[in-house]
Structure formats: C-alpha cells, structure tokens
Amino acid sequence: MRAAGRQQKRSDPALSLGELPDGAYLGRIRERTASVHQAVFERKGVRTMRTARVIIGANYGDEGKGLMTDYFASEAPEQCVVIRFNGGAQAGHTVVTPEGCRHVFSHFGAGTMAGASTYLSQFFIVNPIMFVKELAELKSLGLNPTVSIQDNALVTTPYDMFINQLLESKRAGARHGSCGLGINETVTRCLRSPSLLIQAKDLLRPHRLAAQLLELRHTWLPARLREFGIEYECEEVASFLSKLEQIVSSFVVDAGTLLDAAAISRQYPTDKHVIFEGAQGLMLDEDRIDQFPHLTRSKTDLSNVLFLARKLELDELAVTYVTRSYLTRHGQGPMPGECDLWFPDQTNVANQFQGRLRFAPLHLEQMQDSIRKDLARARRSFGKVDANLAVTCMDQMDLPAGRLCLPVKYASYGQTRADVKEFAAVSYASVK
Image (cartoon, rainbow, N blue to C red):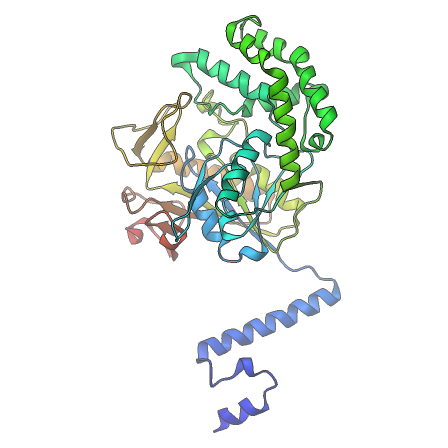
C-alpha cells in the first residue's frame, strides 16, 4: 500500500513503481538524474564528454567493416553520422539488412541503410563518376542518403583513373594490387603543384572545372607518362584522347549530380553520435614500408581520426579493430600462410587488376603487432582511447588458438547486423 501511495504523489507516472521492476526503476532514476545534470551543465556552459566509435580494419581490408558500421549505426540512426576518414571509391563495404537488402558501399557510409548520414572528410578522395553510379544504385533501393563533403577533399579525375589502369596493366606480373580507381594518382597530382590541385569546392564552378580538366591534358598527362617511360603517342593514350572532350563533359555533368545530392562545406558535423568508418586495413597503411609497394595511398590507422577528433572536440574514442576469423587479401603482395583455404565471397570477385581473393589462416602475431603499435601512437597523443576486437565470419571458421591483445567484444555469425553478438569482454575461447 505504501508503494501505491508513493505512486499517487508522483508527478511523473512514467516512473511508476507498479509498472517497472526494481532494476528498471533504478535505471529510469539514473536517466532522469543524468538529464538534470545535463541541463545544469548546459546552463552553466559546461561541455559534456563526447565519445565516438571508430572502426579499423586489422589486416589487409575486407574484414567486415561495413557490417560493424551498420551494426553501430542502427543503435541511434536518426542522430548518427558516419565519417569516412581515409581512402576513396576503392572501398567495398558490404551491408546486408536483416530483410535481405544488399549493397556494397564505396562513397557512402555503411550506416546509410540504417538511416545514418555520411560525412566525407578532407582525408577522403572524392570521385564524382563513382559517386553518381553508387547514388543511382542506392536510389534504386529506395534510399535517399544525406551526404556532406569537406570543401578541401581531393577529387579524382578521369586522368587519374586512366593513368592508374594503364600503369597497372603494363606491370603484368609485377602489379601492385591496385583497384584501378586512381587513388595514388590523385594524391600524387594534387601534391605536385597547386596548379594541378582539384578539390571538392572546385566542383561548384563547372566552367572553371572543365577548363582545369582540359588543361591537365597538357600540364600533367604527358609529364606523368614520361615518368614511367610510356610514350604519349601510344595506342592506349591515343584512344583516351580521342574521347577526351566527351569524357570531360560527362565528368562535369556527374559533378553537377553530386552537388544536387551532397553539400560542400567547411563545417564539421555536429551529430550526437559519431562513427568513424575506416577503409582498407592496417597492413596497407601508406607508411608500412615493409609492405611497399603493395600499399594504399592513405592512412588506414588512427592518425586521421585523431586529427578529426580534435576538430569535433571529442574526448574519448571507442575503437573496434575488425578481423575475419581467417585472413584474406584481394590483390598482390605478401600474405603469410597463404593456402588453398576458400570461402564464398560475393563482394571480392576476381577482376583484371586485383585477380582473385586470396586466403590464409589468421596470423595473430602480425595482426596484434599492428594493433599494438597503432594504439600506442594514439594513446600518446589523445586523451582516452579504449579498444576491442570484432571477429566476423565466425559461422565459417573458428579463431585460431592463441592469446589476444584485446578482448573480443563482438562476433558475427552471418552477414547481417542481427547476426552480430556482443559480449561483456571475453577471450577467443569464449566466442567459439
């Protein structure tokens, strides 16, 4: 009876003891107390602590970063932004919804299907051709993504893609493992001279953009080809130049379509929930000289995240390093333990530049050495960095035996967010 009496005196029936078990009641009290504290802090001008999630590939890419981004974004999609902080259109992050809808994300954050917006930072390389192609695919699925782009993000041109593909084809057996989308060529051109630099803000002036592109035919293309000993008069170059005006015209049209769908801004996002979605993996970082030349031209580790975290005034980073329960590599380069292990993969199909997807047992020592070094660098320069592991493809193969440097907090037993299990903090043995 006394409990009923207290209910009658309460001004908020939502906290009724009669409707909630003891644990839930205490939880609601904590929520109410936290909201009151938040209001007091705001009145006093005190900033609350801000935490962001970070998703990093622990190996050579293709670890399941898209799955984990979708999983985290689904927790609060209406207040969530996914920040792409490295790479570009060469990413291939697969998301399959519990309803069976599938898409491979390249330019858009892998939280898009969950309802999160996308922010392409200055460390992301924008490719209008690939952006428009993927936008059409998403719209065919009934999606209308929200995208903003940092105004000084680099832009890939048709020249960059052409040079990249031409070089890779001529390397024959000595290929680097490139996807052929011009990532390295874009960075090289933009760093070579201010006159060669094209950024996202330049897309806002279509006539000047067209003039810049046509000028690159004389200022960049011949010089770059000479560096590799390729004749400017060769058949491949002649074919490309014969279609150049149409290529440039189509590119400018694609840039206009991009501007209709995305906002170019120098402002950083202010969303409550932030997810940093990495591309490729730690073993492909541009500073991994031990892996040269089979690298990507971007920072796949926490370096760019730390820069952006300060801009966003974040206080804490919750980092999830993602790995399959086995090792894969799509492209040329060293791969310890490579064998005839094989699992089906719809995303990483064989192609003329990367060949087939390669497999090996997970190399724990190599993976954990990369993770330890990345965390050590980050913790020396940032306030608080927590970290854990997510292991995907556990329905295909168990983790190998061995001690792990981080707790396994997430494991997936299928392709969708519904197949992800979260653990308190467990060793590999508890996940099997």
